[in-house]
Amino acid sequence: MKKTPAVFLDRDGTINHEKGYLSDEKDLQLYPYVSKSILSLQKAGFKIVIITNQSGIERGYFTEKKLAVIHKTLLKMLKEVGVKIDGIYYCPHGIDDVCECRKPKIGMAKQAEKELNIDLKKSYVVGDSIRDYKMGYNFRGKGILVLTGHGKKQAKNIKNEKQKPLAVSKNLYEAVKVIINDYKKN
Ligand SMILES: [Zn+2]
Image 1 (tube, rainbow, N blue to C red):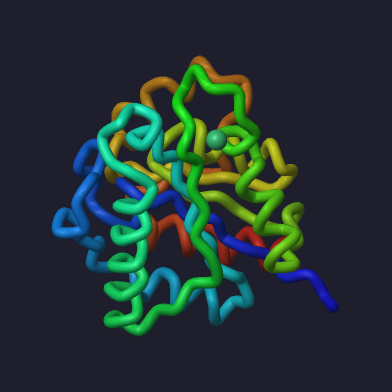
Image 2: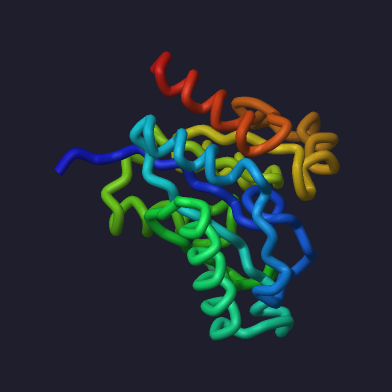
């Protein structure tokens, strides 16, 4: 079976408003351009996978059971705006845990590669954190930083990073335009 490229999307601050360790599905609020962004990517041939660091679990702010409810609600909200995504993966560990899944590590992408038959070298990550775009380069794809969520603050620190993002985009919709253009070129 032919491998498919994917766009890995960070969750908080990228597709829904950043609420700081979101622990209740009632706090989920999608950005208005999420539907058209994801639909454009799917039309261009990308699978869509959400990847999210959820250290709030390790910190005891909420349980994995609660996170499952939050993600079920998120999928339902996406469905209501006409979007069906291919997968959602999370890292429940804390910053001091030794794990392979916490972004910018690539464990979640490797799992998706296997389970969803993804071509990582042709894939992208979009997120509001430096560790998001770095994950893309760590799996030999590419990454974009968006200025929503923590993005504006994060953008100031890019100068200290050896690895720069493919682009710094105003929001997910602008990032999608960059991805589709870049993908056509390669
Ligand atoms: Zn982890």
